[in-house]
Length: 368
Image 1 (cartoon, one colour):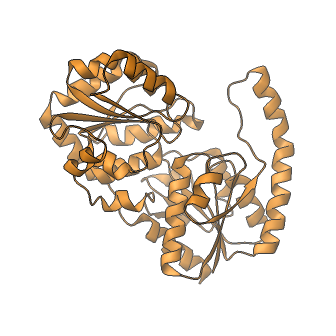
Image 2: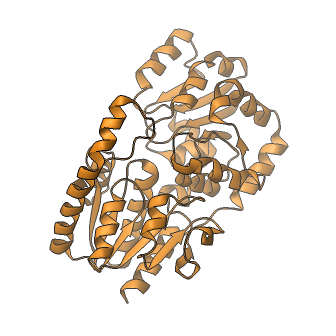
Image 3: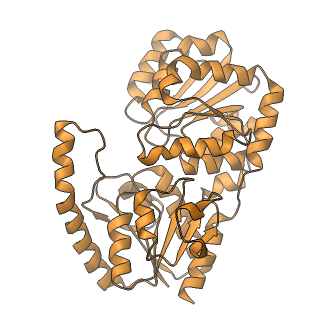
């Protein structure tokens, strides 16, 4: 059994890819799994750390903000795409996979295109409620498309769609820890209110600026915050917390490894609205304030968030309003235990379990 899994660029692509690989290994212990990612992106570090081989492609994404430097980068894209396509073709000839799985990200386009053109079986995993242009194009040759939202026949052939949900990290799907253990893990006081602020694995500037600009809010309202900054804001955040004298309330982390502990410790979560973040939040059943990133294709994070808001399962604050309104919305939730309980129950109703195994079921059907 030989499988190529391609994609990456952020934790939102890498974590489900690794979850799929782990599910393949659980079903076929001798399976040979190879990842294909983008050179210089975080998958080149995270995938080997999970125990899998990865090959990097010299590919980059389209720069949507048209500065002079970005225009130059965009002009180089066709050459990078051709170089990546040739590298993938050679890799496919050598590895000869039974199936090629695309999870989104820069590397998935040249990999899945080359695989389909060479006659290899392909499967797509679409994480978002609004399909991107690349996956819509790749869907023409894919045998199956695994989705996490209803109504995806707007984008894909109905007979190819299988509802599987999004794979998440196993420790979060199991959630075997409780609030007391989570708070002990992070050195938080066992009683009182806890907010978890995450902006994705790379951080989120607007969410970070919101917290940074209102450090005394946490002391004044006696709210403890677990703050994942990402590496770009980490040193600045540490210095600001020390200077403001609020380290008792504000706990700064560059990257939180034990997200199961963090979710368990939290009463309320502030998060971007990436597909995998939402899938995790549904599984843990915590009330959440979603602040969608404006820097994504087709504004798909807002569409992801609205799928929850429409069911009373989340609050939504626009990125532009984050600094002025984000923590006020958080305070409203902390001031209303009934609303927190109702929102937590509503988001838990949207949870999908066993997604990685469901995707492997489709892989098994494809190769049969």
